[in-house]
Amino acid sequence: MGMSASQARLLSLQARQSNLEYQGQQINQERTILSQQATALYNSLLSMTVPTPPSTADYQTVQYTGALGATEYTFDANSIKPDGEFYSITMQEKKHGDSLQKNTSVALVDTNSSGSFKGVILDPTTVTLLPDEEVATGNYVQDTQGNQYMVPIQLTENEDGSYSFPSQGGTYYVKGADGKFTQSTGAPDGNATYYALSSSSSGTGAVQVSAEKTTVGGGTSTEENFITRADMENIYVEENGQVRKAELTDFETDPSQPNILKLKSGVVYIQESNSADAKTYSVKGDVDGVTVGNKGVHRLTEEEKQTYGDAITNSGLKDANGNPYDTDDFYIFYDDKGSANFVLISDVEDGNNNATTYSYVANGEYTKNTTYDDVQLTFDPTNGRITEIAIPTYAADGTVSSWTSISVAAETVTDEAAYEDAYNKYEYDTYLYDQKNKEINAKTEVIQQEDKNLELKLQRLDNERTQITTEIEAVEKVINDNIEASYKTFSG
Image: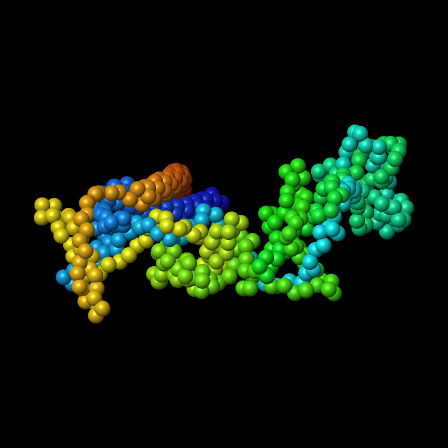
């Protein structure tokens, strides 16, 4: 029995030893994977580019300015391109004359206008406004001065487990989160509290309420020749045989009653109507079904092209391909002061429901960019800067007939906006770099801690393996002693 027990113990210890060795191999494999992950993180850290702040020198250029008569010319060194024995230069010209000025606010575009409507001419003697009147809205609010009450009711439980109100045909209310009582609709909920409106405060939980009211009408005047501001949406004005939408300036207003508009004498007002005697009118400016900023627009007439053509040309506005716009690219409309305003047809039709508008400026100062070819340049031999440019004048056959010289002065300027953008990008990149660095370091710390834990676990396994090895050696000695003793007995 002793021999058998020793052999069983030996087998058990050898199995445990093999298991420990297998666990050790697994831990070493995990540590190898962690080491590879740490190496990958370290390599990613090495591959990161450290952000560098921008230099103002990178955003500096030599800018030249000159003047010819009342026109000022400005260009920088980057705008100069060699053109054979001459140069091509794009210059900003500051001139005086008619032009367009971009308006600061963006106008709302409506492309759903019908361009016509049916209406009847108003008879001012029959246009009246009734006094304001307060009516209940159907909502009830708590009011300590009220003389009505909301009294809780008891629902009736039916045999099928549903609930019903205690009587048919009654009106019941529920209290919302805003404290208002509104009429209940649908089947009652057994978990909800319902109220009935009562003139008595009897009953537990009664709440004193008053009806919330609203004002209908629009004013207090009962005189004739008045309409409400809301009615203005359906009113048009006829002028010079054309009809346009009515505006506030078409009425007399009283600051004390801003919602009341009085019809002016001598103005023909037309009310939109579907009655049998209604007449179809064409709306001024709405022939294209378009309004911009609530103003009807139309394409420029030949007379308007003559009047505003130079202003559009001088504006220097160009499309995405660099082609200048002309009078056929714009709608025109007139503001409340009768001043001409313009909007690009492409902006109206792009579906964004808003557009940039431009106002007409007569004999004002404007700037535009112009590219000149066949330009001659004179350089200062000491520093290589330009001291004079000569702009060509062309003959009928396209050849240069003469040059007009303009003296220019050089100045080093910094594009502050571009430098600021670059510095903001540098700060953002620095933030991203720091965040990535912190992220890599945090992941590395986690890996190092995991590796340390595995190392401790491996050390414990190794200690246990050492103990088992020692015990195996002892058991093997016992077995060997037993075998030796057995052989000596039989060899007796």
